[in-house]
Amino acid sequence: MSTRGFEARARRERAFTLLEMLVVVVILAAVAALVVANVDGTRDDAEATVARAAMQTLREALTGSASGPGYLADMKHVPGFRSVNVRTHDLLMQGTQPDFEPAANRGWRGPYLRNAAGVANTNTARNGAFPAGDERRFPGDATFLARGFFSDAVTSSYGATGDRAAADPWGNPIVVQVPPASAFGGSSGDAKRFRYARLVSAGADSALATPSDRLAGRLADGTAAARGDDLVVFLNRADTYETEEP
Image (cartoon, rainbow, N blue to C red; front, side):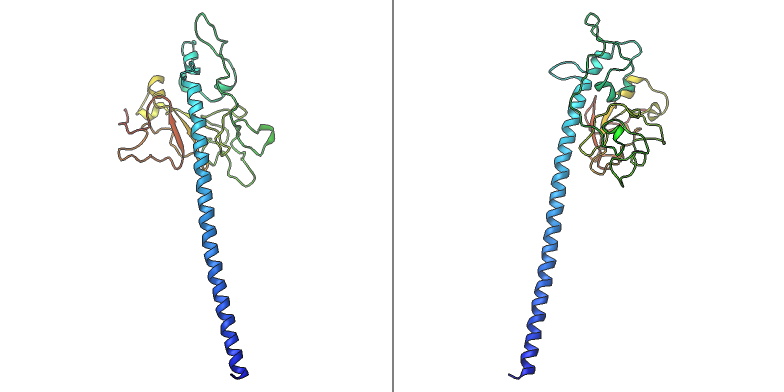
């Protein structure tokens, strides 16, 4: 074989080797993407499991369990108490609630919730507490206002800035959401409103998407209504379809 022939063959072998390498790189990239997606999915599933467990613990602190009555049972006969104003702060710290009176079987005997995870916040002075609307969990994150925890820059129906709060695994406060009276087509009493009270976690995407004026849980076809990836635990009813009451 001539020198030119050897050179041509060598070029072909080099080209084939580069092609093989390119194919291997593409395959490895695809496998890596699948592994990352699987790991991310597994992590999200694990965090969702932790969030649901935290929400169930929070629900029992509010409504009671086999081990004893919860905050609502202790407070329901206290003059002036309104269930629709309950916040997670009330479970963690005594405010204006009176001390428990054994004879009357009423009053605050908390804390009803222990070892609650704290809300993440770049403002270290408020790390762990209910945030301000313009604060963020970490640098570059959207503000708590932008992610649905506030109705305007300073107003939130879920807590007051600096309150104690219980957080989900993503560092966001788990909130008590009670539909407003307007959700019933007009005025409505506290008992009716509280029938639809629920705990809500913003989920992995950390955007609180569940509308506060939504009454029913799931739709007739079994799908969730306008929740994004929020996790929802109702306090007084199952999370199943039910005709919305006027």
